[in-house]
Amino acid sequence: MEQPQPGRRGAEAVQNLQPSSSMSIAYHPLFGPHDDLILLELDEKLLPDVLQQKITLRGQPDEDAVLCTESKTYAVKFVGTSNSVLLIPPSDQSEFCETSLDRNGEDIGQQEVASVIKLAPGNMELVEVAPRLDKLKLLLSPNPYRFGEETEMEDLEEMEKSCIGLYTWNDLVEQVQASDEELRSGLQALSAVEIGGYWRMVDEKYMDTILRMLLHNSVLNDWSLGALNEDEVVSMLESDGFPQKLALHCLHVYGSKVDGSLGKCVWRMDERRVCVHFAREILKEGKRKMDSFMVEWMQKIPEGMQASLDMLEGEVLTERLGVETWVRAFSVSSLPSSPAERFSILFRERPKWEGKDLQPYIRDLNVPGLSSEGLLLKYTRRTQPTQDAEPVFSAR
Image 1 (cartoon, rainbow, N blue to C red):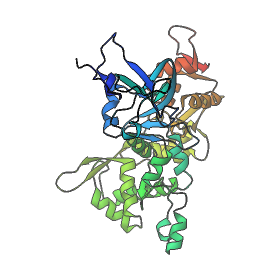
Image 2: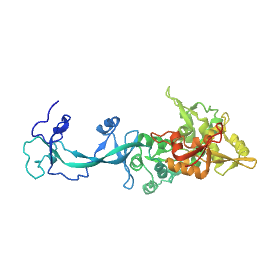
Image 3: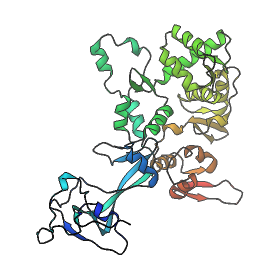
Image 4: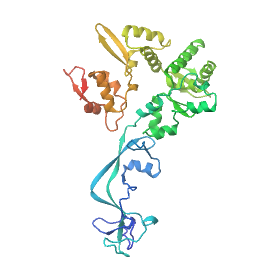
């Protein structure tokens, strides 16, 4: 192994230092706290992202910073150490290449020595965390895209006013603590769409109108909901006064692309998504008796689709009042993504939950290194009167 050469005073002097060997150290003339220099401990799998500059630090001044790769988010935590960690700058760094002095302030000349620029009290560690996407909904909810909005922008001044409170992709990257991939998934979960350079949620009534018109046209034109031609659907909706962007968005929200060959795109309407949409519309007015809800629900869904209560897992709660069973809206999409906040709201809603009822409301919780069972152990108490009984969970 190459031995340190006499007179080398930078980090190179210790890189090849053999075990049990020693070397003199001295204070660098610029020795000090150097708060702009921080040690960061990395998992080897993250090293390529760091070296290729594929990471970013995200967070507002009042938030704890997170480090994001292209697909994951990491909390940045400071860990102190009782050991002395000495930072030695490279010898080719001109700003640090001054004559090194010993502790008495005398020139150490050509001795084999390492010049210490800083004593590090600890280092930063990265811990993978769930993306903090609740803020995304808070940003986008106040200004949903509404019917007729495109005709309201009559002049430049009006257009500028209408953009207040709207967010571009770069705005969201700056505001939301999530990786790019996680942010895209969050936008998809909110059924957001980019319109005029701004990411928008679409007003629920507007989406309902577009969907109903699409289904109406499918009946008039004898279109199969399992094989909708994109060009025909979009053209028809445009002729009914809907922007092309929103027509396509409706297909993305309520359907899935099944064929893009031969120069045409074919879509299939998703049975569950369409049925859940109409269930939500019915329950907006409040809880309903199960029987009357089912009758109205079956009347509203398109012909050929089969609705079942299983589709409404995580969307509704049922309860018995006397001899009647009632159903009301309670959607997992309205709940926070923080496990502590999620369980707090769930137990305010119901002091006790059967396992089969609770599962749909925690299945989407994303806590790296912690499974659904781990979340239940951390935030709930489990009781089971008999071995065959359904477990019941209450707040811990």
